[in-house]
Image (cartoon, rainbow, N blue to C red; front, side, top):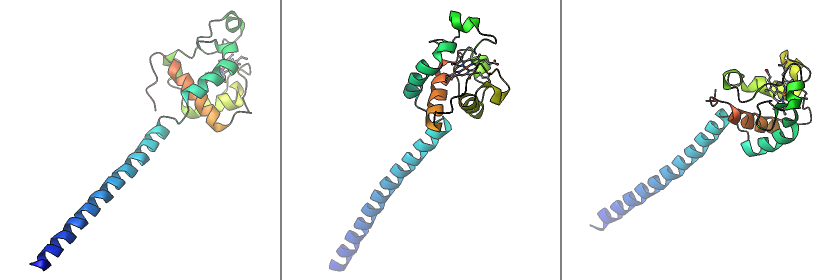
Length: 142
Ligand code: HEC
């Protein structure tokens, strides 16, 4: 009689342990999955990128990214309209990183598009994340 009770208690203990283990494991999986999804979407921060964009890009691409300011219109070639989703959405993450870091000539474009060699990879990713929010139709991610 006593034997049986000890055994069932041991079993209950084991089940509880297993249950707790499973919960911990699911949490770990969730964290890993969230990280992967964030990476796949480009880990840049839209907010930080927006600030960098205002200081570095708006002089030519305009505050709204449309390159509609008189300065923008005076340039030849004209700065790219970042709200033009039909064009912008087909540019890959790598292409954008290259042109932002190394300037127009790095991707066969005009040298008027300047390089930003002082920005680190995170800052480049941040600006790309912001630029992606400007596109119409919206960027669906690749
Ligand atoms: C001095 C003016 C100037 C500044 C500042 C500038 N751009 Fe440009 N950008 C241009 C011009 C001009 C082009 C068009 C080049 C061409 O079509 O040959 C261009 C093109 C681009 C393109 C399109 C590249 C392609 O492959 O078609 C992207 C993306 C871009 N700029 C992003 C940025 C971002 C982001 C910033 C801020 C970090 C920035 N630009 C700052 C002038 C500028």
